[in-house]
Length: 314
Image (cartoon, rainbow, N blue to C red):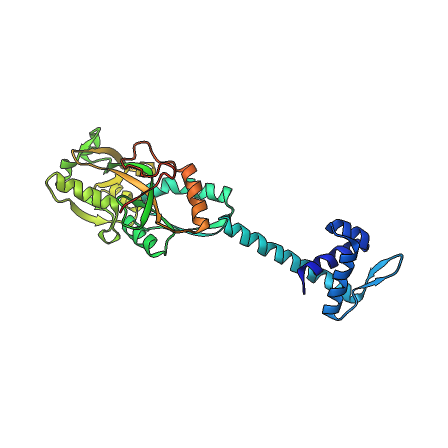
């Protein structure tokens, strides 16, 4: 059963006039008549009663109208879906995220994708810390992830945020009266941080800063995310080193103070994806991300490709 023949049939069934149906389809009347004959021969039934004055549907023709309309609508939907997928306007993109940095950037990205690319489904996978996100992007189980630098071989990344480290303290803590806290003053403090097993870039940066200051941090409690970590701080369990974005989480009895020292890093947070991933949907999402999450001017990495704003760690 040819879709072109069904299209001609539906036009005649709705117009009940071969001339008007042919004009509607922008074809001559003779080819349209041939289409109807082919369809009748294919189905083995007569679809129209035709006289010199009128065209009427037969009972078989009446039974075919609605199924034919549904088939044509389904075929049109298939064409639209395939074309949209080819153009990157439809599909599925998985995004890994964790931590306060992604909490601030992720809503910007998801809102923009929903608005500009309604045919793309973003699958958001939380609690995917930087190390895990890099592994999953590399093995293809994630399309894109919020990661800290540097990235591994085969991953392309674009910096979207620069994060200073700050210290979260109970408001009753003696250091809460300071305008800033030197990292060396954490030597004897109980510290709340992310689990070691999750390869958190924030935890690694905190530990390295403490080592550079000449001591090993006294980690007494771990928490799976920034909110729970700050809840423990508010409960007086300890202090926590977090990124500046965490200051947007407002909890009672928690204050934030800048963390200073000779080797306290500023963390570049990036979107990372597998180099060479040709998914049209992913490329469309990356184009939107470039609009709503521009690379910060202070990003401390040289960009080898000024046209794309990306770099690869090789």
